[in-house]
Amino acid sequence: QTAVEYGAAHGALAMTTPGDTSMATRNEVLKLAGGGTARVDR
Image (cartoon, rainbow, N blue to C red; front, side, top):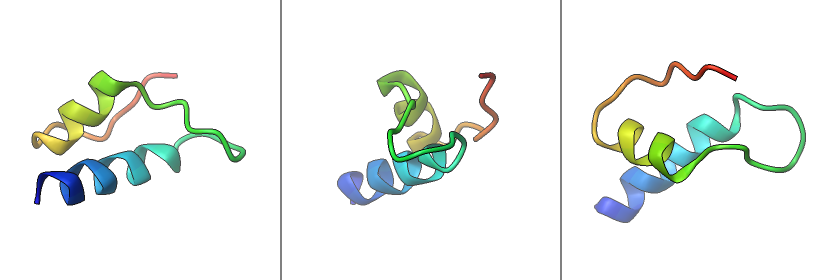
């Protein structure tokens, strides 16, 4: 279950940047997977 939550969080964050490379940090993924907001300041 944890892996699914991390994967979903990373996938959502990956959609916040253009291109094929994710710019999401580990802390952003952990925060979102833990129920935090998906708001990202880039």
